[in-house]
Image (cartoon, one colour):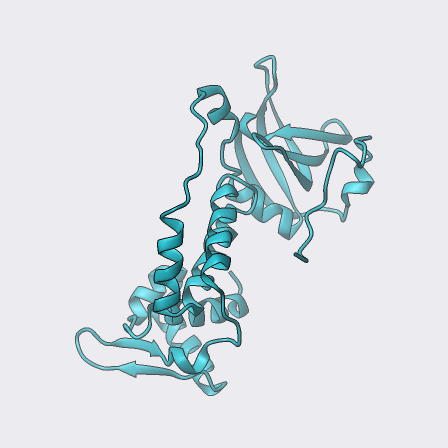
Length: 238
């Protein structure tokens, strides 16, 4: 996590736990940096006008004026419930880690009364899980390394088992995800085959991010010859 992202995440973390203070040591463990780094980050935020205060004592630490930092955005209880359901459905998807972060942000900006109302609504919602072991296995979580590599455009080293049980190790340039109701696929440019290849996520035995930047390729560049009518591009606009 770079410093800019960490500064934003620090504010969100303090806002989510306010008015309870968080110690520099606890924050350092949360963000996997030193306590001194956290102290420098807090100072930078304070100098930029973020209302973060230090509380002394054995149980002291840093806290934020939550009311003064709430963004001009409010979620209704049905909206919060809808987001929670959507995130639950995406639990094994390529952005699972990001969905948890998004839900924390929703909770951080909501009032206690609104959260209680949403919780009562969620008590009337149930999601059906797959009872078939074969179907359950097909919805294996997408590894975090794969999620990050798509965003960062980095080469991955995969150990993959095909439908016959044969295993190969290869370097791929991740390009896109395709999701069905029961499966996620990784669309790549395979360096071993020197062409586009699709990998079922549940057949990837191990994955390592090499850190090597991958050439810029789009889904259209791979030319998988899948009819447009079969696939739907998610839209950020509701």
